[in-house]
Length: 136
Image 1 (cartoon, one colour):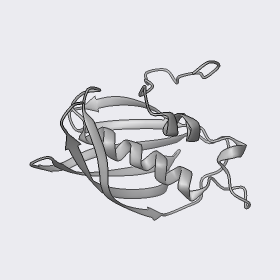
Image 2 (cartoon, one colour):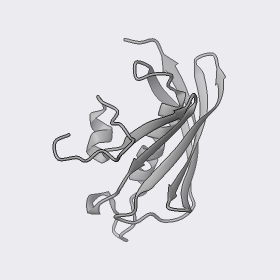
Image 3 (cartoon, helix red, strand yellow):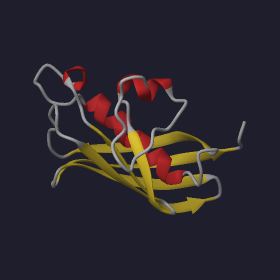
Image 4 (cartoon, one colour):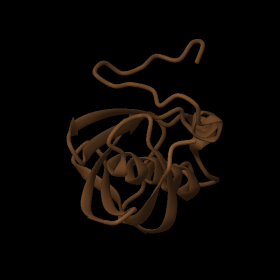
């Protein structure tokens, strides 16, 4: 994480090289079952049209869906399914914020959702089913 500036009040989720390569993304816990993540896209996050690539937005949303299912950083979770709806374009340089929440727990399955915003604009909404695994 050399040279990366972590936004004030946020933390970095250690140990996920894919998310670091795509992001990096940062998070904070708002309350039990409520999280927020953020990142500011740069040129390599954008597609041919100058908008943030949908796959980058989906990865960002997926991280927030998973974090909403966690009780601590020791938890191990995987995405079972995710549905993403693109509402508006995001562009390079505008900070994106994902507001994630746990909707319901059913055994080891967590039902979560996230709204991704650029300022006041909603960019994406997503919902997911996340499986909580036994710690390794």
